[in-house]
Length: 149
Image (tube, rainbow, N blue to C red; front, side, top):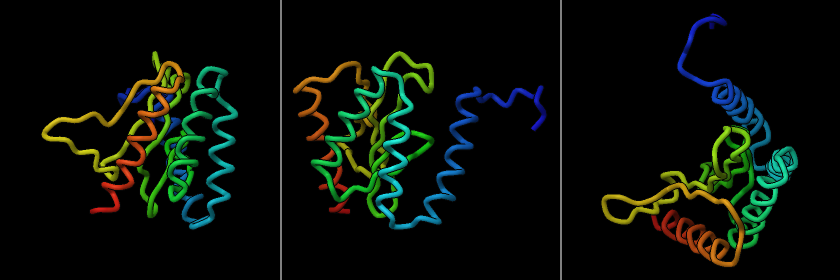
C-alpha cells in the first residue's frame, strides 16, 4: 500500500486489522488452549488506561464467572469471548479507537434477535449493579439462544 494513498481507514483501524490477522494465526497455532487466550486478554486489559481497564476487568469477571464455557481470546486487539471458536461477545476500549465510551458488543453468533430491530452493542461509561445485572442477563441470553441454534 502506498503511504500517500488514502484507503479510508484510520491508523487505529489499520492497526486493528493487522492485530486481527496476527490473532488468527496465533489462535490457529494455539487451538483449544484456553490459557493462551486468557493470558492474551489479560495482557490487553493491562495495556488500557485506568478507566477503560477498570471497565474491561469488570466485563472479564462477569463473562468468565457467569459464562465459563466461553473461551477468552482477543479480537481486533480487544478482549473477546468465544464459543466453538466463534466470538460471541467482546469489549472495545474507548481509548484504542478514540471514542467517547467503551463498548460491550455481541456478534450475530449471540442470536440476540428481538423482532426486526435489536441492539448488539452497548456503551459502558461506568460500572454499577444495574450494569452488571444487565450484562449478566445479555451474556446468559446469548449463550442460551446460541446453544438453541
